[in-house]
Image (cartoon, rainbow, N blue to C red; front, side, top):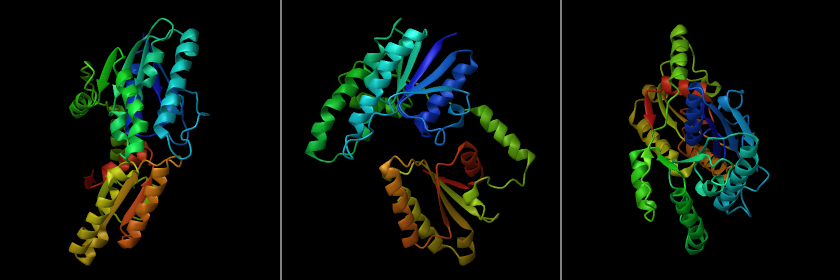
Length: 318
């Protein structure tokens, strides 16, 4: 049996969180002991395995600021992760024998984790270089980001094992961190196939089962459903789906247009300013395009709701 501690910045409901939760479940099923250490975990905004006792979660450093004067998000995230790494190295590692640290998203904690008692192995999982997720906003922003970008590249190279989530990310990794000799291995995100099988059996037992999503109860049975499922962030371009859907409605007959529905199901967190702003922007676009009868904006559906949406949809937009 191996003792594994996952160190993660914010254990919410995004793709990165789904990946580490599934990885932890798989390791636990193989007989290993796993738990999470995170800067933030909201039991009402998380995957159920992290709130129902399936996986042990400990929160540290949530009192540290997430922003300063409405800015410096990256700096604050780095400081919060460093605090979590310090706690893991100098508190947890002295209480129990940790064999492996699994750190992802933010690499600045890696050198601190190397100071832990018994020197556990460190795995860093790169979903995407953090510096490429930052919006370019002029000279001052580039000056602010320069030391953070250097720190990211320097600390990524200190992990014992570095993994990326796809061959695409592997290419981006090489183009971004050109001073590193590290060539990561590709480890694709896993799927919780047992859950999907159980849901499929549940649907088969009740063929007349409705959506199971409260906001979709009014959708007619003969509806043709387009599903756009992604976080409420501008870079995901939900607005393109709305404008394209308007063109489709205009091209169809009145009877066919009434059957069409576009469901935008996005990850949404009240603490994230862009989530709130973009959701309201999309509501305004829906109103401007006069699509109120055909579009549903759904925030943070749970796992069962997402499964039902995917099951009922005729066309998936990405």
